[in-house]
Amino acid sequence: MSNPLLIAKNAQQDLLLLSALVNRHGCITGATGTGKTVTLQVIAQALSDGGVPVFMADVKGDLSGMAKAGVASVKLRQRLDALGITAPQWAATPVTFWDVYGQQGHPVRAAISDMGPLLLARMLNLNDTQQGVLQLVFKIADDNGLLLLDLKDLRAMLQHVGENAASFQSEYGNISAASIGAIQRGLTAIGEQGGEQFFGEPMLNIDDLIQTDGDGDGKGVVNILAADKLMNAPRLYSTFLLWMLSELFERLPEVGDLDKPKLVFFFDEAHLLFSEAPKPLLQKIEQVVRLIRSKGVGVFFVTQNPLDIPDTVLGQLGNRVQHALRAYTPRDQKAVQAAAATFRANPALNTAQAISELGVGEALVSFLDDKGRPNIVERGFILPPASQIGPLTDDERKQLIATSIVAGVYETAIDRESAYEILKGRAAAAPPASEGADSSGAAAGSWGSVLGGLLGGGSGRSDTVVQAVVKSAARSIGSQVGRELIRGVLGSLLKKK
Image (tube, one colour):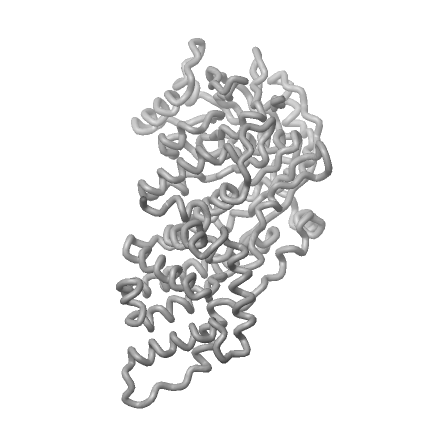
């Protein structure tokens, strides 16, 4: 049976979010400084108290305070008394901290092969031609059992394919040196923004995000990604979160509608996901949002204006909290009218006027009812969270990281034999080309030497290579064909039909 979560209230009623309908997704919108972060914290803590794990990105550094019980300050007591709201039972939330850079949380990593060429192309901002070349590089690596785990693997593979383009042309098509160069330059930029730390092993195990702090009815763990530094690389940030959604979709089984979701995913600064995204990508994001509910996952988009979210995606978001929007210009006024039109009208409320009048911590709320229908929009005050508003100290954060349920699992990077080591080793072992020999023939011979070694011909390293290939196959979805076609769910969905 659905557990109602009290999120906001007004003089007439409590505004309840039904846990069984959180997988119908939602959005939290409003101008900067109107209370979106606190609303996110309130919803996340209510879900955690109900045994639902949560994942969120902390773009300002404020959400770490969820790990500590709140306190009733004089100012807060006065506000609660004025609103007629009872103070919450102050309590902490179980938290696991994550950080791509490994500084403010446990390291988060993904293998290059799991990210796949299509999401990587988005991260690198490649054009269609460059994306096609990147896909060929991945296919050549797949065909020859060369693992792409980190950036140096992909750089080595790009260099090798570029140097031996003529020998690959008949089988794979033209490989432009200009495109290879553009991809290499993009990798350099991504590496400086955090790609060197993000790409590699051990890769994040999605199951580690779906944890409770005890057996039975324990609280759901709130996974907080430190994103204040990551936001300096917005394309890396948005593509990383998109990859996480794809991993959840790919790895979780179908469960249908549950009494409560398995995980709720908050996508803060959601406009970065849709900014400059091509139409095919938007269509596939809509598809993932629509289908991931059957995996027991709810997704909340957090952004300033609901118009930041495409209509095809916005139409999938049943639970909505709208904080104030300021209508200072004619363009702003149109945005307010458009935001008001996304709600089910309340005859007793001028929605557009209310949006521009809302105070800090006040919002327009419309959650789904027990039949899955949007309730009419209501104006109310968001309840204060039971946990601390504002960040932890550095020492408090470090102590929680050291004692978390995944402490020591991801801290040490693993650099097993992969494309970089194999190609470097073969290049060192290859005999120098004789004087006057045809350069393209030498290149083909060098590549033949690599293939010979992979197939077990004349190298003491072949057993290690075979083991690496077997491990790579085990991580994929069944076969070489599966690896090529289903490299993360978005990798497969984004292929043109």
